[in-house]
Length: 431
Image 1 (tube, helix red, strand yellow):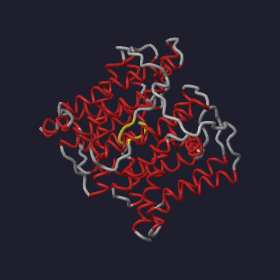
Image 2 (cartoon, one colour):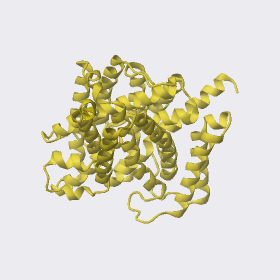
Image 3 (cartoon, one colour):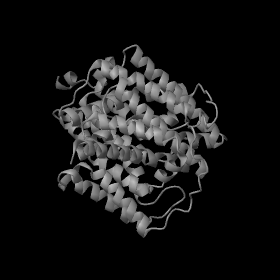
Image 4 (spheres, helix red, strand yellow):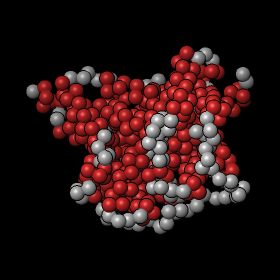
């Protein structure tokens, strides 16, 4: 295969990964807020644009690694909680979404300040391999439930497993894993592309096409600014925004460490790299708010994609992000891409998370696991994962900031492992 053809296929595969990582969560948010097909299509268009733009900016000016900026699982949890707490307070869905726009702006302000004032790298002592590994592990546990529901057809109003969708989804999942592990040459390199393509074909042939789609009349359109309305600034979200910004610093560290390990063979980063990453993550949050989409963050699953495919060059990644931006201006193409079966997209993402969970475990095991570390991990995992199983309604009587914290297992578990790791010093334990 010529170098040009190889680069073209790498661009296409990165493009498919960007799409697969962008398609599922807008559908989840649409279901949570009961959005119409037209509103979900608009959200999908804006998501593609923001993902492409912010990924390009980070790769050029920020951390400068081939890391996708995609819809954050942490923010999906916050969206879910705000939807419920807003309904309990008598607000409609759009009012909650406007509050979330403001929350993303506040979070962006804190992240930008961390970068501008060069504070991001100064809190690196907090993000030990124990913390980074625990964050990656909790992230994969939290999102695995979302992806598995999508694979089983349990999205939107569905309450029973769709056997046909589940069969195609698991075929896709094991096909991607099988090709990445046992494949040779180009089949191994393009495992994600082949898996999604074959899964899409199987879904089209054997399952009934979706009846929700509607004809698209516009050929070209710009992504809409503040489609949910102007941000509604509520002082109660500022503490949540600050805590979220601090947690997202661990997201930057975890993503940079994971991808640098995949690209260079060892975890490596510089202080200036993390400061730039924090600054442009702030820019990402401003952009996500301005275009009424789910806040994007560096996705550590990019390392799983690189491990699966062996694609380590940044150039194809940059071209793929520009292609995604271009595609977002054409609603018919967005509508076609959005027709990728959710079950297939979720299956491909779950396959990349196999590698990501392995990286989390590898980070945890990179240091000797003595009684102190095992106890910290056990407490954080038990409580953090346990909170993931509790419905947000049970925290209704608490103040808003506590509701947002305790109803989010990833947020609570990560904070807990950071606090315990800092308060319970290793020297004290040895004495």
